[in-house]
Image 1 (spheres, rainbow, N blue to C red):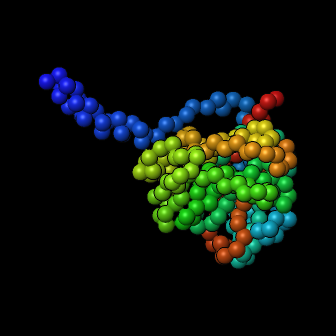
Image 2 (cartoon, one colour):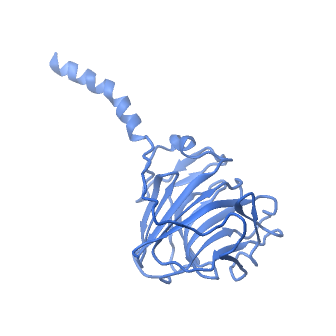
Image 3 (cartoon, rainbow, N blue to C red):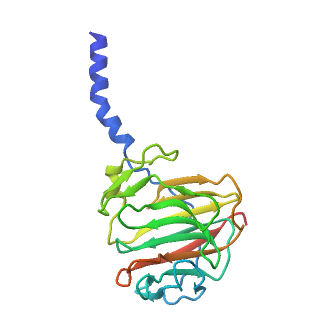
Length: 246
């Protein structure tokens, strides 16, 4: 009888345990030491690079307190990059992009747009906050989910060594399209260790195995070349940086 009672208790507990396993785990951060690198009114401290393989820069303006990017003509994209170079740092920003354009948050970028990219591929079959080697030697692509054709749905990638930290069904609770959401990325060392978060939930931890890029570089935002994204926009605001190890 005691064994039967124990089995019944375990059976009743399993649904609750399953729900806990899928719960979103938001982290708390020490946000002291961050410095704003965007004044909300101008591109002071930033410049457009015309040296990337995505075009001659695209269109970058400040609208309603946000850096807003698009292609200025069909197919012509590019990056806007900080004048200052950074080494080990953490960057936080808010994003409200249209679902369609391919963008990115570039870490230690040069004028050619070669960088470690925290992915902002905000489109069908795209990904947020995975890691991609933009123009770097070798193949770097660490991602653990893909969007469906709906911004409200994601599908976990099977067989990856960096699994999704939450149940994919919880995505609508983590991310709200059409509102400002927070993206955070940290890069340390070289070969670097990179960590990313979405609205406080850890998404990716990736450590490169070899040195394949410079120790310092700019922070850049991208509008991908190709297609016609002259009427769809990427938007970033409240961009802050903490330099680490100083």
